[in-house]
Length: 206
Image (cartoon, rainbow, N blue to C red):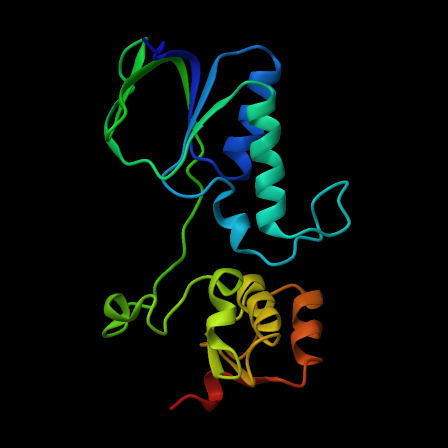
C-alpha cells in the first residue's frame, strides 16, 4: 500500500512550487507537489523567458519541464491535473483529499498557487473559450494561421504575446484601455518595431 504521509505537501506546480520541491526533495524531505493544471504553471504560457538568472533565453514550457524533471529526479512526487476535494490545515498533521487519489497527510504545507488568466467578463466569453477566445498564445497561436488577431491589454504579457502571435497571424491588433502601456520598455519597443502589429489606445476607443 502506498505511503500517503509526506514531510511536506506543496500546493501549486508553478515556478515557486517546483523550486520549493527541488530544494526540499534534494534535502531528503519526502515531498508531494499537487497541481490542478500542468506542471510549470503560467510560465508554460510564455513563448520566451529571457530574464531567468543564469539562462539567456528559453521557452516557458521548456523551463517548466526542466524544473519538473529536477524535482522528480531528487525524489519529489508530482500530481498534475488533480482536483482537490477537501483541505484541512488546522491540525498539526495537515490533510488533503484528492479526487480519484484519496487522502494525503503531511507535517508541513506550502501554498504556492500563483495566479491565473484574468477574463474580460464580456458577453459570450465563456461560450467562446477555445472557439476563438484564447488565453495562451503559445498554446493556441498556430490555430490562427494567416488570420487577424486581437490582443487585449498593455502589460508585459499582452505585448509579448502579441509579438509571438505575429509568427502565425496576418495582422495583430493590440487594444488597450489606457493611453499608455504598463509594459517594460523592452516589450514596448519590440512590439512597436513589428510591422504586423497595430495599436488602438483609450483615446481611439468609442
